[in-house]
Image (tube, rainbow, N blue to C red):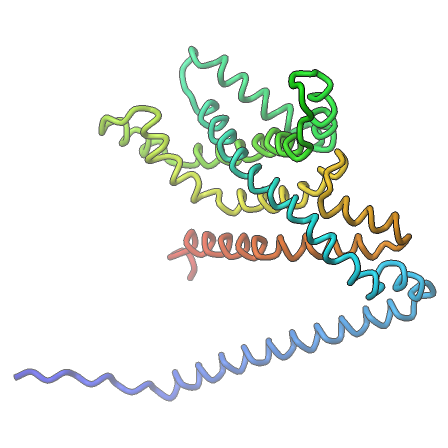
Length: 287
Protein backbone atom coordinates (compact mmCIF):
# COMPACT_ATOMS: atom_id res chain seq x y z
CA UNK A 1 0.00 0.00 0.00
CA UNK A 2 1.52 3.26 -1.14
CA UNK A 3 1.27 6.43 0.88
CA UNK A 4 1.12 9.91 -0.55
CA UNK A 5 4.31 11.84 -0.16
CA UNK A 6 3.94 14.98 1.93
CA UNK A 7 4.75 18.32 0.34
CA UNK A 8 8.05 19.61 1.67
CA UNK A 9 7.79 22.81 3.69
CA UNK A 10 8.75 26.10 2.10
CA UNK A 11 12.32 27.07 2.89
CA UNK A 12 13.12 30.12 4.97
CA UNK A 13 14.96 31.64 2.03
CA UNK A 14 11.86 31.41 -0.17
CA UNK A 15 9.71 32.91 2.60
CA UNK A 16 12.17 35.76 2.92
CA UNK A 17 11.97 36.36 -0.84
CA UNK A 18 8.19 36.50 -0.69
CA UNK A 19 8.25 38.94 2.22
CA UNK A 20 10.73 41.09 0.32
CA UNK A 21 8.55 41.14 -2.81
CA UNK A 22 5.45 42.00 -0.76
CA UNK A 23 7.39 44.81 0.89
CA UNK A 24 8.44 46.18 -2.50
CA UNK A 25 4.87 46.04 -3.76
CA UNK A 26 3.50 47.81 -0.68
CA UNK A 27 6.18 50.47 -0.88
CA UNK A 28 5.44 51.07 -4.58
CA UNK A 29 1.73 51.47 -3.82
CA UNK A 30 2.48 53.90 -1.01
CA UNK A 31 4.80 55.99 -3.18
CA UNK A 32 2.23 56.05 -5.99
CA UNK A 33 -0.54 57.23 -3.66
CA UNK A 34 1.66 59.86 -2.06
CA UNK A 35 2.90 61.24 -5.38
CA UNK A 36 -0.67 61.33 -6.72
CA UNK A 37 -1.91 63.26 -3.71
CA UNK A 38 0.99 65.72 -3.92
CA UNK A 39 0.50 66.25 -7.65
CA UNK A 40 -3.26 66.80 -7.23
CA UNK A 41 -2.65 69.25 -4.38
CA UNK A 42 -0.12 71.24 -6.40
CA UNK A 43 -2.42 71.40 -9.45
CA UNK A 44 -5.34 72.48 -7.28
CA UNK A 45 -3.22 75.17 -5.63
CA UNK A 46 -2.10 76.48 -9.04
CA UNK A 47 -5.70 76.63 -10.28
CA UNK A 48 -7.05 78.30 -7.17
CA UNK A 49 -4.24 80.87 -7.10
CA UNK A 50 -4.75 81.78 -10.76
CA UNK A 51 -5.98 85.37 -11.25
CA UNK A 52 -8.98 84.31 -13.34
CA UNK A 53 -9.99 81.22 -11.39
CA UNK A 54 -13.15 82.77 -9.95
CA UNK A 55 -14.41 83.79 -13.38
CA UNK A 56 -13.42 80.43 -14.89
CA UNK A 57 -15.21 78.52 -12.14
CA UNK A 58 -18.39 80.54 -12.55
CA UNK A 59 -18.27 80.20 -16.34
CA UNK A 60 -17.36 76.54 -16.77
CA UNK A 61 -17.96 74.76 -13.45
CA UNK A 62 -21.11 76.28 -11.98
CA UNK A 63 -23.00 73.58 -9.99
CA UNK A 64 -26.40 75.12 -10.66
CA UNK A 65 -25.95 75.22 -14.42
CA UNK A 66 -24.42 71.73 -14.25
CA UNK A 67 -27.57 70.29 -12.65
CA UNK A 68 -29.75 72.19 -15.11
CA UNK A 69 -27.89 70.98 -18.21
CA UNK A 70 -27.27 67.37 -17.15
CA UNK A 71 -30.70 65.83 -18.02
CA UNK A 72 -30.98 67.70 -21.32
CA UNK A 73 -27.47 66.82 -22.48
CA UNK A 74 -27.91 63.21 -21.32
CA UNK A 75 -31.10 62.98 -23.38
CA UNK A 76 -29.17 64.26 -26.40
CA UNK A 77 -26.50 61.64 -25.78
CA UNK A 78 -29.09 58.97 -26.58
CA UNK A 79 -29.06 60.23 -30.17
CA UNK A 80 -25.29 59.76 -30.30
CA UNK A 81 -25.64 56.23 -28.93
CA UNK A 82 -28.29 55.29 -31.51
CA UNK A 83 -26.21 56.66 -34.39
CA UNK A 84 -23.12 54.89 -33.07
CA UNK A 85 -24.91 51.54 -32.74
CA UNK A 86 -26.07 51.62 -36.36
CA UNK A 87 -22.75 52.97 -37.63
CA UNK A 88 -20.76 50.19 -35.94
CA UNK A 89 -22.72 47.54 -37.85
CA UNK A 90 -22.33 49.42 -41.13
CA UNK A 91 -18.62 49.99 -40.61
CA UNK A 92 -18.06 46.31 -39.83
CA UNK A 93 -19.85 45.13 -42.98
CA UNK A 94 -18.24 47.63 -45.35
CA UNK A 95 -14.78 47.21 -43.82
CA UNK A 96 -14.86 43.42 -44.12
CA UNK A 97 -15.95 43.75 -47.76
CA UNK A 98 -13.15 46.20 -48.53
CA UNK A 99 -10.54 44.08 -46.79
CA UNK A 100 -11.74 40.99 -48.66
CA UNK A 101 -11.57 42.82 -52.00
CA UNK A 102 -8.04 44.01 -51.32
CA UNK A 103 -6.98 40.46 -50.41
CA UNK A 104 -8.07 39.05 -53.78
CA UNK A 105 -5.26 37.66 -55.91
CA UNK A 106 -4.90 37.49 -59.68
CA UNK A 107 -4.90 40.12 -62.43
CA UNK A 108 -8.60 39.60 -63.17
CA UNK A 109 -9.49 41.14 -59.81
CA UNK A 110 -7.37 44.25 -60.34
CA UNK A 111 -10.40 46.56 -60.91
CA UNK A 112 -11.92 45.46 -57.60
CA UNK A 113 -8.63 45.92 -55.74
CA UNK A 114 -8.19 49.35 -57.35
CA UNK A 115 -11.69 50.50 -56.34
CA UNK A 116 -11.18 49.29 -52.76
CA UNK A 117 -7.76 50.95 -52.54
CA UNK A 118 -9.09 54.21 -54.00
CA UNK A 119 -11.97 54.17 -51.52
CA UNK A 120 -9.71 53.75 -48.51
CA UNK A 121 -7.24 56.37 -49.75
CA UNK A 122 -9.92 58.99 -50.41
CA UNK A 123 -11.84 58.64 -47.16
CA UNK A 124 -8.74 58.25 -44.99
CA UNK A 125 -7.34 61.43 -46.49
CA UNK A 126 -10.54 63.50 -46.28
CA UNK A 127 -11.34 65.10 -42.89
CA UNK A 128 -14.45 63.67 -41.32
CA UNK A 129 -15.98 67.13 -41.00
CA UNK A 130 -15.73 67.60 -44.79
CA UNK A 131 -17.40 64.22 -45.35
CA UNK A 132 -20.19 65.30 -42.99
CA UNK A 133 -20.77 68.48 -44.98
CA UNK A 134 -20.69 66.65 -48.33
CA UNK A 135 -23.14 63.97 -47.21
CA UNK A 136 -25.30 66.13 -44.96
CA UNK A 137 -25.84 68.95 -47.43
CA UNK A 138 -24.91 67.36 -50.76
CA UNK A 139 -27.17 64.30 -50.69
CA UNK A 140 -30.39 66.23 -49.90
CA UNK A 141 -29.51 68.72 -52.65
CA UNK A 142 -29.65 65.91 -55.22
CA UNK A 143 -33.39 65.56 -54.67
CA UNK A 144 -33.35 61.77 -54.84
CA UNK A 145 -36.22 61.45 -52.35
CA UNK A 146 -39.43 63.40 -51.97
CA UNK A 147 -39.38 63.56 -48.17
CA UNK A 148 -36.81 64.99 -45.83
CA UNK A 149 -33.88 62.68 -45.12
CA UNK A 150 -33.31 62.35 -41.36
CA UNK A 151 -30.17 64.11 -40.21
CA UNK A 152 -29.22 61.14 -38.05
CA UNK A 153 -29.24 58.91 -41.14
CA UNK A 154 -26.95 61.28 -43.04
CA UNK A 155 -24.57 61.43 -40.11
CA UNK A 156 -24.54 57.64 -39.88
CA UNK A 157 -23.69 57.35 -43.57
CA UNK A 158 -20.80 59.80 -43.15
CA UNK A 159 -19.49 57.80 -40.19
CA UNK A 160 -19.68 54.55 -42.13
CA UNK A 161 -17.92 56.00 -45.17
CA UNK A 162 -15.06 57.44 -43.14
CA UNK A 163 -14.42 54.80 -40.50
CA UNK A 164 -14.90 51.80 -42.78
CA UNK A 165 -11.76 52.92 -44.62
CA UNK A 166 -9.73 52.93 -41.39
CA UNK A 167 -11.12 49.63 -40.13
CA UNK A 168 -10.63 48.03 -43.56
CA UNK A 169 -6.92 48.82 -43.47
CA UNK A 170 -6.64 47.41 -39.95
CA UNK A 171 -8.38 44.22 -41.04
CA UNK A 172 -6.21 43.97 -44.14
CA UNK A 173 -3.11 44.22 -41.96
CA UNK A 174 -4.51 41.44 -39.79
CA UNK A 175 -5.22 39.27 -42.83
CA UNK A 176 -1.71 39.74 -44.16
CA UNK A 177 -0.32 38.89 -40.71
CA UNK A 178 -1.87 35.42 -40.88
CA UNK A 179 0.73 32.97 -42.15
CA UNK A 180 0.11 31.87 -45.76
CA UNK A 181 0.23 28.23 -44.68
CA UNK A 182 -3.12 28.72 -42.96
CA UNK A 183 -4.75 29.75 -46.22
CA UNK A 184 -3.02 26.96 -48.17
CA UNK A 185 -4.08 24.36 -45.61
CA UNK A 186 -7.68 25.55 -45.83
CA UNK A 187 -7.64 25.38 -49.62
CA UNK A 188 -6.10 21.89 -49.52
CA UNK A 189 -9.08 20.76 -47.44
CA UNK A 190 -11.42 21.81 -50.23
CA UNK A 191 -12.49 25.21 -48.94
CA UNK A 192 -13.06 27.96 -51.47
CA UNK A 193 -11.38 31.35 -51.25
CA UNK A 194 -14.45 32.73 -49.50
CA UNK A 195 -14.67 29.75 -47.16
CA UNK A 196 -11.02 29.88 -46.16
CA UNK A 197 -11.25 33.63 -45.63
CA UNK A 198 -14.40 33.37 -43.51
CA UNK A 199 -13.57 30.27 -41.47
CA UNK A 200 -9.79 30.33 -41.17
CA UNK A 201 -8.18 33.66 -42.02
CA UNK A 202 -10.61 36.27 -40.68
CA UNK A 203 -11.00 34.79 -37.16
CA UNK A 204 -7.21 34.80 -36.72
CA UNK A 205 -6.88 38.25 -38.27
CA UNK A 206 -9.50 39.78 -35.97
CA UNK A 207 -7.77 38.38 -32.89
CA UNK A 208 -4.48 39.91 -33.99
CA UNK A 209 -5.88 43.40 -34.54
CA UNK A 210 -8.55 43.56 -31.81
CA UNK A 211 -6.76 46.34 -29.85
CA UNK A 212 -6.46 48.47 -32.99
CA UNK A 213 -10.12 47.89 -33.82
CA UNK A 214 -11.13 48.94 -30.31
CA UNK A 215 -9.11 52.15 -30.70
CA UNK A 216 -10.98 52.95 -33.89
CA UNK A 217 -14.25 52.30 -32.05
CA UNK A 218 -13.28 54.72 -29.28
CA UNK A 219 -12.38 57.35 -31.88
CA UNK A 220 -15.74 56.86 -33.55
CA UNK A 221 -17.45 57.37 -30.19
CA UNK A 222 -15.94 60.83 -30.02
CA UNK A 223 -16.53 61.80 -33.64
CA UNK A 224 -20.19 60.85 -33.47
CA UNK A 225 -20.63 64.14 -31.60
CA UNK A 226 -19.78 66.03 -34.80
CA UNK A 227 -23.19 65.20 -36.30
CA UNK A 228 -24.35 68.29 -34.42
CA UNK A 229 -22.96 70.42 -37.27
CA UNK A 230 -25.78 69.06 -39.43
CA UNK A 231 -28.39 70.18 -36.90
CA UNK A 232 -29.00 66.92 -35.07
CA UNK A 233 -30.02 67.51 -31.46
CA UNK A 234 -27.42 65.30 -29.82
CA UNK A 235 -25.37 65.89 -26.66
CA UNK A 236 -23.22 68.60 -28.27
CA UNK A 237 -26.19 70.43 -29.82
CA UNK A 238 -28.11 70.23 -26.54
CA UNK A 239 -25.11 71.78 -24.79
CA UNK A 240 -24.95 74.53 -27.42
CA UNK A 241 -28.64 75.31 -26.85
CA UNK A 242 -28.06 75.57 -23.11
CA UNK A 243 -25.06 77.84 -23.62
CA UNK A 244 -27.07 80.10 -25.95
CA UNK A 245 -29.84 80.37 -23.35
CA UNK A 246 -27.72 80.83 -20.21
CA UNK A 247 -24.50 82.43 -21.55
CA UNK A 248 -22.63 79.90 -19.42
CA UNK A 249 -20.28 77.21 -20.75
CA UNK A 250 -20.88 74.61 -18.04
CA UNK A 251 -23.09 72.63 -20.43
CA UNK A 252 -20.04 71.93 -22.62
CA UNK A 253 -18.27 70.48 -19.60
CA UNK A 254 -21.31 68.29 -18.97
CA UNK A 255 -21.23 67.01 -22.55
CA UNK A 256 -17.51 66.30 -22.34
CA UNK A 257 -17.88 64.40 -19.06
CA UNK A 258 -20.74 62.31 -20.46
CA UNK A 259 -18.66 61.35 -23.48
CA UNK A 260 -15.77 60.40 -21.18
CA UNK A 261 -18.06 58.28 -18.99
CA UNK A 262 -19.50 56.62 -22.08
CA UNK A 263 -16.07 55.90 -23.58
CA UNK A 264 -14.24 54.93 -20.39
CA UNK A 265 -15.35 51.25 -20.24
CA UNK A 266 -14.25 50.68 -23.84
CA UNK A 267 -10.93 52.45 -23.23
CA UNK A 268 -10.23 50.18 -20.26
CA UNK A 269 -11.30 47.16 -22.32
CA UNK A 270 -8.86 48.20 -25.04
CA UNK A 271 -6.03 48.42 -22.53
CA UNK A 272 -6.94 45.00 -21.12
CA UNK A 273 -7.02 43.36 -24.55
CA UNK A 274 -3.71 44.99 -25.49
CA UNK A 275 -2.04 43.78 -22.30
CA UNK A 276 -3.44 40.26 -22.72
CA UNK A 277 -2.27 40.03 -26.32
CA UNK A 278 1.18 41.29 -25.35
CA UNK A 279 1.37 38.74 -22.53
CA UNK A 280 0.43 35.93 -24.92
CA UNK A 281 3.05 36.97 -27.46
CA UNK A 282 5.76 37.15 -24.79
CA UNK A 283 5.08 33.74 -23.23
CA UNK A 284 8.41 31.94 -23.09
CA UNK A 285 10.27 34.98 -24.33
CA UNK A 286 11.14 36.48 -20.95
CA UNK A 287 14.15 35.31 -19.00
